[in-house]
Structure formats: structure tokens, C-alpha cells
Image 1 (tube, rainbow, N blue to C red):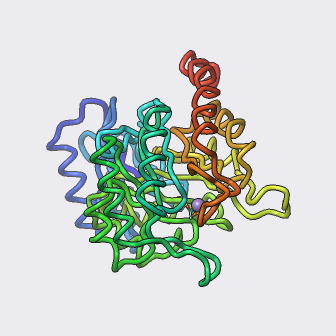
Image 2 (cartoon, rainbow, N blue to C red):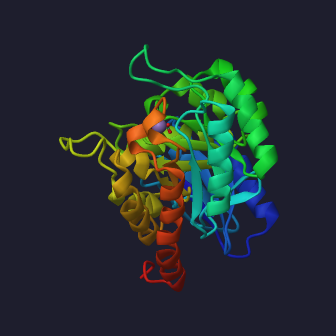
Length: 341
Ligand code: PEP
Ligand code: MN
């Protein structure tokens, strides 16, 4: 249930509602919006009537049910968009954030040449896999700690904050020492033990959509993070499995627009995994910008044909700089407001 406070409700009135929500056995989450505060009562114990009765409490405007199964991620609970700060880069503030880098960190040269090229091209964050979720156990699994140390060094050299994937609860602490943002890969979107553990870190999370997950399941996975105490969550649409085989996955552009409607969390597009085709990265990135997505994540490699993972979908360094040039005008147009009608 949501308890909408009146405009100008006092702190005392808000606290009274919070106390009553807790007495009724629910968790109370307060959101202070630009106009008024909202208290979300989350839980399920059959004592909803006690919440409904709060309609008569001082300072309360209305008590309404939360329409969706996800609660804390919903726009109903928090009408203003969330801004997530990743090492000084703000995601969700209306700017278009570019995360770029290799699928896997493979060597010092490969990572540093990519990092300096994407920095020069205008990227805001560096990505690179250290622990890789590979379909086959015989494929390259990532350099682990060595990759993390290279990522840390690349951050020191370029100033770009770093995003890398965490696959296991055991690695959370170590990876947090080296990365500014922790990625939950598509295959782990519903790894609830991992989500619960990540809810307790102070690192922002990039939560990719599972290849076969509905938008509702994806937002419920994000709910685990918020309910467990981590509010700094960015969603990433990376394509879903459909009957189409010409593209590696089907980048679900509608989900980007839908998520913006349903949730206050920022959302990115990953056209690299979402299409599997370098030629589709620029058009899909422009589409994501037009839809109001908060940015993109793209894979870049100095020599895609030699890449140890995801070479066929990676941009080379020139390809990345062409992508950035091709985004300049659409982003100016978006800033002028043609997508927001
Ligand atoms: C990746 O970002 O390299 C990756 C493995 O992505 P996903 O989890 O979306 O497949
Ligand atoms: Mn990849």
C-alpha cells in the first residue's frame, strides 16, 4: 500500500505514519518527492485494514494499493527518476551515458588501448569482463584477479570509472575493491542469493535483463536489490530470445520505453549483445536515445577478429569513434525535446 502524504505534511506526521506502518508489521519506505512525501508499506501479513485506516491520520492525503507486484522500483512509489552516481558519473539525470570496452579483459595492451580510445571518443565508463559467464566450459573464462588489477590501473590512467560482472557471492568483496559498478549478467538476473548479497554492498548495480525474462520478472529482480537496501540500481536491456535467428538476440526497444513508464530506475540499452551485429549498433543506439533511454553499453575491441569473446559483435576503435559521431546530432535533437512529447 502507498500512503500519500499531503503537500506540506510535517516530519512529525510522516514519522507517525511510519511508526503505524511498522506496528502493523510492514516495512516502511519513505520517498520525499519534489512536491510531497510518499510512505510505501511493503510486506504481506493480512493486516492491510490497519494501513487503510491511516487515511484518517493527520497529514495523510490518501491510502492506495500499489498496482504492480514490484513495489519499491515502481514509479507509483517514487514518481521522480532515480539518479545513480557511479564514481562521479551520473546515470539517470537526463544525460546519455556511454559505457564501452571489451567483452573480456585479455591483456594490458588490449585493455589500455581500448580504454584510451573510448575516453578520447567521449565514453563515460569503462567496461571489461574479468569473470565471464560462457556457454561452454571450454571457452575463455576470463583472467579473474589479473583482469581486476588491470581495470583498476586503467581507471587510474584514464579517470574512467569501471564496470565489471560479478557471477558469484564469493567474489563480491574482491570485485568491489576494483570496480565502481557491479554488473549482474543476463544469466544471473534471477540468482536470488547473488541479488541478496549485492543488496548489502555500497556499490551501484547494473542489472541486465535475462534472455528469457519478462519485464515484470526483471523489475522483480531489481526489487530484491532495493528491498535488501541497495537503491543504486541501473537496468540494462540486452536482448531477449525470440524465433529470429538473423540477430543474436532481439533487442526489445519497447521494454526501454515501458520500463521508463513503470519504474523510476535508469535504463540502458546494450545493442552489442542485443543484436550481435556491429552494423546494427549505431541505429539501435540512436533508437535508444530517441526512446529516452539513459545510455548504452557497447563492446569495443582493438582487433575484433582476435577477441577471445564476442569478437563478431564488437566495434573496433574506429567503429567506436564513428558511433560517437553518429550519435551527436540525435542526442542534440533529444535534448531539444523531440522524443518527449
Ligand atoms: C557481457 O556484458 O559481456 C555479457 C556477458 O552480457 P550478458 O550477461 O548480457 O550476456
Ligand atoms: Mn560480451
